[in-house]
Every structure is written in C-alpha cells, then in structure tokens.
Length: 569
Image (cartoon, rainbow, N blue to C red; front, side, top):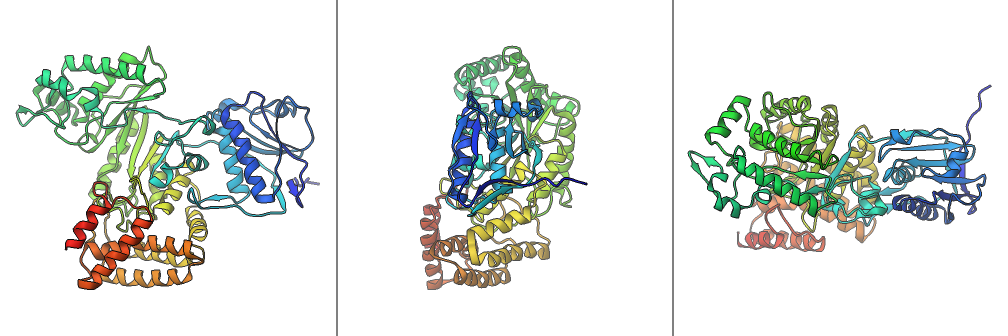
C-alpha cells in the first residue's frame, strides 16, 4: 500500500501555526528572503508569519530558510557545495517547508521560485504585479533542486535596470543592476565595462608614444582607434594600468580589456604577420590579453580578464588559446534575429554559428553579447519573440556561461513591446527550457487584461508577416522593411482599435496606446500619411510617448530631436 504525501498547509481560514526560521548568523540576503516571503504570504492570505532565528526552540510548524540548526536537527542531508552561490533546494518534510540555498543568493532565489511557481505570484513590471488571494495556502509535496545553467544573466533593458528589487525577483545577477547585500549582490562586477582601450592606454600617452597608435593603410592613425598591441612598451604600461584598476576597484571580479567600438586595428608588420598566421585579427588581441592575464593571476587568482570577439575580431584565431583566466564575450551584432541563429539560412547566421562553435572549443569561459531590439529605431516592430528561446538554448548548447541581452536601455525605456520582451528574456536566462508561451500569456493577461488576446493577435500578425515576406531582420533595419507594408499597418490599426475598446480601465488603455506607438512610428517615419492627417498623428504620437516617459527614439537620437525633424517634413 503506497503512502500519498499530503500538501503542507501554511494558512487556513486566516490562521497559521507557522513561523519563518532563519539562521542566527543569516547573511543579509537570507534575512531579506524571510522578509519577502513574509510580505507576499501576507498579501496572499492576510496572515503575517513571524520571523525568528534558529536559536529559538524548534516547533512542529516551521518554514526553514537557509542552512540553520532546525534544518540540521531533521537529519536531512543537504549538500550545499553542490548548490554553488545560486542553487537551492525546495522540500517539504513532515510538515516543514524547507528553502535552503547556497550563499549569497540561493535561498532568496528559492523563495522567489516558490512564490512564483507554487503560489502564482507574478512580477510583470516594477509597477505591475499579480498576487493571488487565498484563504487556504498549501504547498504540494516538494523535493526539487534547482541550479541555473548560466552563471551571469543580464537583461539590459530599462524595464529591468531601474529597480533592483524587481531584477532580483527575476533572478538576474548582472553588472548594471543596483543589487545590494540584501539581494546577494552581483555575480559579476566589471571594470571597465567593454570597449576599454582608450581607458587602458589613454590617448595622451599615445601622443607621447606615436608608435602606440595603430598603423592603418601604411600610416599611424590617431583618434578613436585601436592600439598597436605588439608594442612591448605599450604592454608594460597596460599591465601597470590594470594593476591600478584592481587597487582602485577592489569590488571588481572581471577586468575588461577590449577593443574600442570601431574598426581601425593595427596592421603594422608585426601585428599583421601574427594575425595573418592565425587567420584572424583576434590573434593580436588574445595574445595581448593573455599576457596581461598571466601577469596578474598569481596576485589576483580570483580575477578574470574579459575581451570581446566583436565585428573584425569575431573569428577566433587558428591555434592561439585564451588563458584559463580569460573570458571571451562573443557578439552577435551582424545576425538576423527573425530566425533562429542555429538554423537561419542567411550567411550572417551561418557564419556566426561557425564562429561560436570554434570559440566553444577554444575558450575556458564563453559569454555572449546578444541584441534584442532595433537600435536605429527603438519603436519599430522587431519580430524576434518567436526566436528568443531557440537562441538562448543554442547559446547554452554551445557552452555559453553568461548572457548579456541588450535592448532599449535609454532612460525612459518603453521601446517596442519592451515590458513583455524584458520579462520573457528574464525567464529564459533563468531557465532556457521554460514554457515561453505560458509566460507570454501570463504577461499579456496580467498587463493588458481583457485586451490581452487582441495584443496576442497583433504579435502573431507581425511574426506571420515576416514569414510571408521571408524577411531577415537585423538591428539597424529601416522602417521601409518589406514586412512593414500597408497591409500589415492596416490590420494592426484595426486590432489596436479593438484593444483600446476592450481595455479594462484608463491605466490599461494607456498601456495599449503605448503598445500601438510602433505602428504609428512606421507610418510617420515612412510618410504613409500626409498633410493635416500626418500632423494630427504626430501630435497624438508625441503626447502618448511623452506621457510614457520615452526619451529616445533610437540609441543615438532623443525623442525631442526626432519630433523637431518630423514636424519639418
């Protein structure tokens, strides 16, 4: 006769015998985990459970957070070493609910996973969350261990950057979040943050040493350029500068030594000969970075050195290997993002797939810088929602350990479908195998209410158009792209008319209007409307955009500057 495990009832009819137990020596993130669990259980059930430390006598009804004495007294074996810094165990045992994770973030992440997956809490944006109301709160039998496959997870969208609590609830741990000790801090702290040659070897130093400048087309060139990385004196100065950085920034875990955001790499006889032999300009960079990494590894064994494989340096060298303390961050900037990176027939994606496979075999640690919006037109429809999961899975399959998903990071945010895309990306970075369609439906229902199914129809229309046109979509494509034709715009307008009519209230109505802006943006940017009709549409567009706090129309153009230009056309 089998014994069926019973659920653990935490609250029933407004009453609970439970309390939350934390270690007496709990780290800040474990104390915060208890506070978050207490707060949301109260929101759910109106019952506020007490938080006490494990130096108090044990009772029969406890939620055990972290590695505490009460947990150990149960005789359960929990291998904390296997959990790392972010893994955790969720378990029910004889009426106890156990949430124990590695320090510093594991227990906190366990609490958020319980709230989200077992109790139905949702954090859609920093301002919009869903907390179910229950008179009876019960936890099903649990014995689950979780550990993220990615060590570094950063969704670089404004919607995730502005609120550290919100980022932590999505278990993001990247450099740009203002995560404090209560969140368990950041998994990585860079100094500097990419494109660092000007900071490493200042231009003033190059003026004193002209041979530090790169040789391009037979002459040394100055300005925003790369450096002559085969110059032994430059290497010495670079090592000294890195040591200064390490002393000045003791919180840094990764030192970035990477090319400036331009071409103009050195082709002097020595640099060129080495690059030619290795069949890639990445060779000079890797040799340079390896030398610096070797020079600091004895004194700073826990520091890693990162460099980019980006544009001209994306192809890996033929035989040269990055040192064990070097991270390669591969960038997908040239790719098509309307089709999966792995299976898209475009030359850009085939080439990228070849490069990531080669870097996988060379690199001790591989990160990826991925792109998830149109940087020339933040408000232009960007049909990539259907490929986000396949791309993240592809990266993980290739051994990638860190993902930086760059989107609209302007101060005002609210790019095209920004809240939804940021939400989905966060879910994928935590669990690449998650049910993305369920997350999309959850978000649309929670954020757009009765208009959700119409917004879903719009998203499907956009992606269907791309397939019909067999379009490859890149991150700087113009609004004259073939899938943004009159037929698409006409259908989209009808859908948004319906969505606005269905909106539950003024707040939801405004969210629908913001979602509609990309359709109007295409009309305005391509002069699909003329005369007084155009001026009226522009006024409506700007009124909604400014009310939404939108500051930028592209990575390099502010909304106000664009508005002035549009008003003159």
